[in-house]
Length: 218
Image (cartoon, rainbow, N blue to C red; front, top):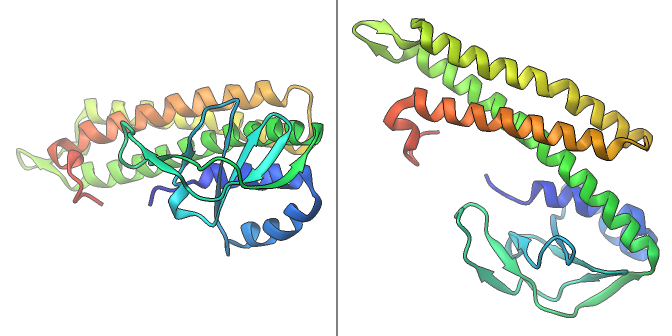
């Protein structure tokens, strides 16, 4: 189910960075899954994903962190699964000062990492589903998965995903240890995992055939 998973990760990192009463109020609920959140930063754009479906919308503008008073206005998105909202202005001030900007920078670094992890996981799920499908789909009395062209296509997808995995693990360690090159490692993981996930999605759609373009396909 589409949702602001990446944004919730970033919100947790942001709150942990600013500390104080806001962290005490929201972090336990976010960590346990009892509450969900999304966020936006004025440096990255004026929209928040799925702001109508979460318990909290955090906004960062400069050195100020606020809890938005409401989801605001729904904007048109090219992807109907990615609902973008422009939160209402104002709201409760949760923290101010340089630590807000520092925490926001770290939060969006973690958001990039979470996006990479999401792309890798999605690619792996698509590969499993496609392998299962081509084993049962037949043409001329033969499973299409036995055709060399199909095997090679799926092998290329697997190689791409496996190549991205160690970069993702390396980025995770760099972030956890506060390595000075963590940002570069996250960027490398995001690019590689994104390309691998995209390749998996293209292969899945094409090898599933027409049924791969239907909403009914699980």
